[in-house]
Image 1 (cartoon, rainbow, N blue to C red):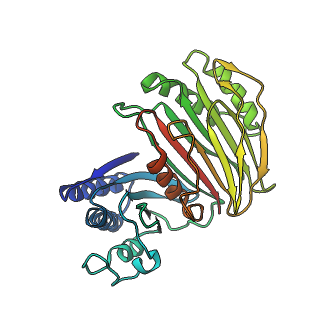
Image 2 (tube, helix red, strand yellow):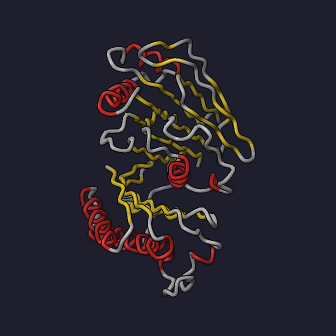
Image 3 (tube, rainbow, N blue to C red):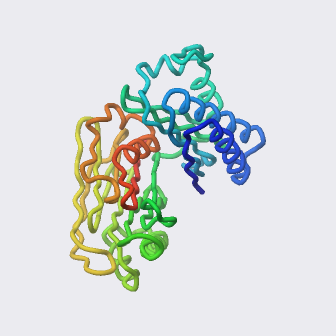
Length: 330
């Protein structure tokens, strides 16, 4: 369940508030939490219009460990915030207001995070959860997906599957666009979800290759995270771009040429260290292949949803389906 709403005028504030209340209700959140959601999006939308003039708010359901509820992501391309720490303090304002916006959002959120660079916009995430048990999951996950401009259906797909202490993250880009591309991607996702828990990423890719031969085919990547061994195993086919960033070190993960369901060569898995603070980022080619973290200092320190949405904002291309998935070791 996800909706992205553009903001360019004051009437958009009421619209996003109504949508947030409705989605919180559908997700089974209490009336108090529905009111929290309304307050959060109102403050976020008002800040976007006041300081950036335009932007967008994405509302989506999420589940992370035992925590589930509504996620709000607000994005703009405005002037950014020179001092984020001060801006989070009640009473601080550069726009002549009471300066309670970010503090209000933080107090009414189960989780709150913000990223801003002067001259390069602002992004914030606020989660409203039906349960506050957020410490039991070893992984934080964020994603952003959008169809090609003018298309209603995205041919990309991604999924998360927990198998014991392992996490499998799958990303696909069905060939072409629209419903037929989505059919290939979604059928491969079903195969991943039903795979033997003892399988490795390369095994699942081979199963998907056989299982989607009657479709257009897709490029595909699977990452398996193992907290016990502190390792991540990756296998990909086609032009998925994937990295693991750990501190100052960035490792690019190599996929095999080919197309799952059509002409797949021998899959060569890659194994890399996975430790606290490691960040896995994978994108379809709807994001510019030149995307990198150089112009986003400190972004990998933020929540994966912020990482995904900021990179999608800055490198996504309207001429293609575009999806990014981010996993961070808690």
